[in-house]
Amino acid sequence: MAQSAWVGLVRAVNVSGTGKLPMTELAAACRAAGLTEVKTYLASGNVVFRGSSAEVKIVAALEAKLTEILGKPATVLLRTAQAFDDALARNPFADREPSRTLIYFLPHAAEADAVQSAKGQKNEEIDASGREIFVHYPDGVGESRLRIPAAERGTARNLNTVRKLAEMARALDADSSR
Image 1 (cartoon, rainbow, N blue to C red):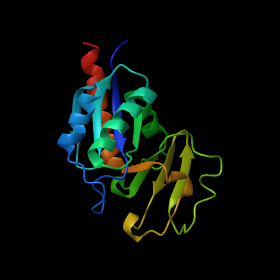
Image 2: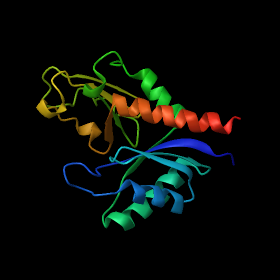
Image 3: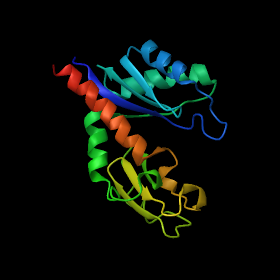
Image 4: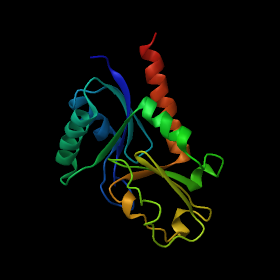
């Protein structure tokens, strides 16, 4: 099976003092799970790599390795390079401030009522499509009281981070086509 480029997002690490996970350990866990060309980005559980297994197998292997490291259950959200680009293309808030626009990556497709079930919405803009929920926080995330029940099992990254990870994954895909 050909090696595909993947983007992995580890949920709830290195945020507000929870889930301390050095990126060197994340990279080591990826290599131990049989993944190659591993590159991490920032210190918040972002990684790109090549892997030849199906998504469910990569997720299971990574979650098992990270659970050993963290001493508690780990959650990994995974997308192919193409799926990551597709999420960027579907973002209805691409023209808003990138640091105030988040994409929540979910393990499954967003429920039909994902947007309507949000609580505490003030002036935030919300949309859901596929396995992502898109939110623009005009006043910043820290000022928001927005709670999105459908996003609780996912993990969010701001648009700057998503664009960089997409670029890194595209570079891995380009390297394989040479």
